[in-house]
Length: 343
Ligand code: CP3
Image (cartoon, rainbow, N blue to C red):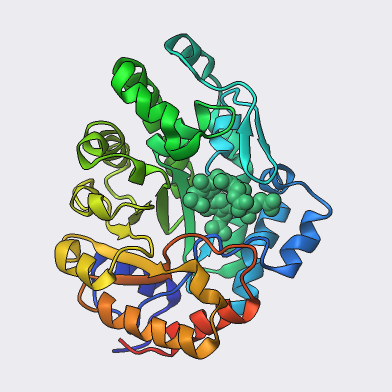
C-alpha cells in the first residue's frame, strides 16, 4: 500500500484500518534518559516546565528530533489538572500532595478551574501543530478517574493503593463521589486537548491493576466508561492504558476506547486472540528490554509485530514508560526496527 503520513498511520491503526506498518512511539518518550532533557531541567523545575508552553514544546520535540517517532505526546503530567482545583502538588520526582481529599467533606474543596491549569498544555499543543504541520500526530492525555483519585487521596500513595482499595469496602459512597468528580476532570482534561488539536488521546490508568475484575467494573471501569461516553461524538481515537491488568483484558475492551494499551506482562498474541478484534492493541515491550543489545531489541520488535498482526490494529510501544537509566541506543534500536518493518 502507499506510504502513509505518520498521522494517517496512527489514526488508522487506532481504528483498525489497514496500514503500511504499525506506528511506533514510547510512553514517557520525553524525560530523564535524554541528556537534553536533563540539561533543560537544570534551569526549570518539573512543574515550571509543565506550566511554560515554550519549555513544554521544546521537551515534547526532543525525542522526535532525535528518533523521529510516529507520534509526539505533549509534555505535561496527569496530575496537572488537579492543581487548578486547589490540590497542592510537588514532585521530588515522585508526586506528593500537601492537602489530600480524605473524606466526603473534602470534596467541596475540589473547586476551581481545570481549563486554567491546562492552559499551558493546550497552548503547547497548538504550538506543536505549528511546528510539526498536519502530518505528525499530536497526542494528548489524562489520568483515569481511579488513578487520579489514588494520587489525590493521600499525601504519598500507599503501597498497592491500599487506602483507596480499603475505602471501596468501608466507604463506597465516598469513593463513588470522588470517582464521579474525577471522571468529570478526566473528561474535561481530554476535551480541552481535543479542542486544541490533539489527534488522539491516551487515558492512563496506572493503578487499575490492583483491583479485582469485579471491583474494577464496579468502581474504576464505571468511571472510565462514563468519561469516554461523555466525550464529543466526533472525538479522535481514545487509547486506554492500564498497568498490571492481564486479569482485566475483557473489561478494558468494553469501555468504549478504540485502543487498549497493555503492559509487558501480557502476552500480546494472547491479548490479540482474546480482545484484539474488538479494539486495537498498543504495546508492549518490557521497558527494561531497551537496555539489551540492539540485536535483541530488533528481534523483540519483530516478535511484537508478528503478535500484533493478529489484532484489529497495533501501535508499537513499551509496556510502560521509558525509565531514566535507558540508553539512547536502546530507544534508537526500538524505533528503527519498528520503522523498517512492513505491514
Ligand atoms: O510520555 C511522555 O513523554 C509525556 C509526559 C508524561 C509524564 N508523565 C512526564 C513526567 C506523561 C504522559 C506522564 C503520565 C503520568 N504521570 C502517569 C501515568 C503513566 C505512568 O507512568 O504510569 C503517572 C502515574 C504520573 C505521575 C508521576 N509523574 C509520577 C509517578 C512521576 C515520578 C516517576 C518518575 O519517573 O520518577 C512523575 C514525574 C514525571 N512525569 C517525570 C516526567 C518526565 C519526571 C520528572 C522530572 O523530570 O524530575
